Amino acid sequence: MLKRIDPSQTKAWTQLESKAREMREKHLKDLFAEDPNRFEKMKREHKDLLFDFSKNLIDAESLELLEELFSECGVKEGIQAMLSGEKINETEGRAVLHTALRNFSDEEILVDGQSVNEDIEKVLEQMQDFSDLIISGNWKGYSGKTIKHIVNIGIGGSDLGPLMVYEALKPYHNHLRCHYVSNVDGAHINETLKDLDPEQTLFIIASKTFTTQETMTNARSAREWFLRSNASENDIAKHFVAVSTNREKVIDFGIDPTNMFVFWDWVGGRYSVWSAIGLSLACGLGYKNFEKFLRGAHSMDRHLAEADFKNNIPMQMAALGIWYVNFMGAESEAIIPYDQNMHRFAAYFQQGNMESNGKYIDRNGQKVSYATGPIIWGEPGTNGQHAFFQLMHQGTRFIPADFIGFAESHYTMGDHHLKLLSNFLAQTEALMIGKTKEEVEAEMKAKGSSEEEIAKIAPYRVFEGNRPTTSILGQKSDPESLGALIAAYEHKIFIQGLVWNIYSFDQWGVELGKALANTILPLLSEGGEIDKDASTKGLITYIRNRRGIKG
Ligand SMILES: O=P(O)(O)OC[C@H]1O[C@](O)(CO)[C@@H](O)[C@@H]1O
Image (tube, rainbow, N blue to C red; front, side, top):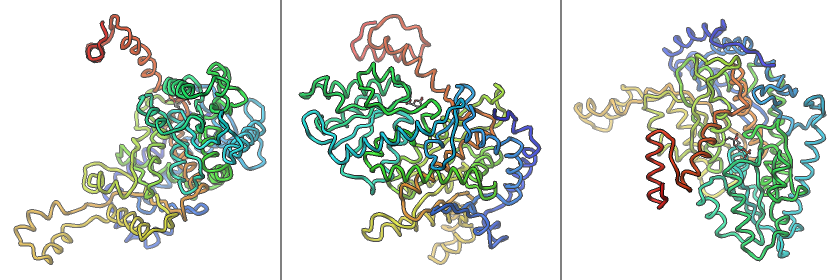
């Protein structure tokens, strides 16, 4: 059982509030001037990864108070409860064991007194055998041709994880091409399938529940598309496999259960990339790379369990997030990878973070009186610089940002990579130091601007700076580093949920919209009386009229 402490009633919380008033008067530049060893003291390393926390608007005393807050809220005990398989997802009565999926230690993990180790190993073996068959070409489609294209049909956690990782690890792609269809908008599946050959295409229907409207609609359309070729129902087994926890529904859909890869209710959708949901990755990157990805995450799990607060990377990330959201007034966090291939990383953690911690009811069933999960957003640098960085530098919002990059690139053409990295470093520097009025005026004067021009334009060219960033650097983007990085963010989210006294592993907030969509669908296709509010009714009527449906 997790503790049920209202964090705002703790001793540390009140102290943090007064500490934050003090810190709001400080400038990051001064913190660096006061302590020349700030970088050395505030950087943390894990394997190849370097986390530089020094450009954050925080000092040692604030971090000590956050450590106290963590201890008052039972963070360590909460982590232990998760790792040991306790049913900490209490609103769904489930354990939370994505860490077990990447557990390469001998430690046995029990759910309801039963070890899950063997089940996990079995599925990993099945994934390895299957991906080897597909990659080697020994798995043949119905006409005897090898598979060239894999289409993963899923949504949310059954899509974003594999898609993000497949994109991020482009240099590791083999000859197969993986595609990801998620949106129920027919554009998605049509545009994906239009250039594919059914004889050489394999579909992975990925859905934890196997009931999700978008996925089942796309899966049915994929089957129809497949059967429109010369294929028959008997050929489906060679072209459709399923990843799910729901065997019955998989069979109902017509997929041979021998072509089913299982996972379990103790794997949350948004934490499922480590499970058989990663099947497209095992195929498209090769099983060895998938395993390296799991091992990278496992190393971060060990680090989480073993390192003390000061040296614990996910704990430091979580502490900073809480500091900014609850004490410094931040509403959002930006994630900006200086790595084009990581272009879906922020989108992935939108779900990871916002579906986990976007909650206002606490573990006592009461409405919270403090802010919980922030808005997560971001795009790769340098593109972001030419889009939203204006607001980050001179806007009225306070936006802590993570910058992620790698010392080396897989791509050796020209000097792209050094230019990319120089932008990364320049932006974090600029966000921190800003540019004073005096500096602007002196610069304009040196360039020959008149006094009048300086007075008029200088205010627009001043940057206050003092905008916090965390820089995360690795050697080279690879499966292990990516695994470790994702795990660090996952743990950050969980730790924050522990402190905020919320349940991070359910997602009741997505249900209402799903249920209402089911009431609207027949109104759009069949007509009938519309018992809805005036706006929804008006919109339904508009669509009906435009589509020629009589009311
Ligand atoms: O894998 P499933 O069951 O199709 O669910 C897909 C997604 O839908 C949600 O349940 C709600 O959006 C997510 O948590 C999940 O990742």
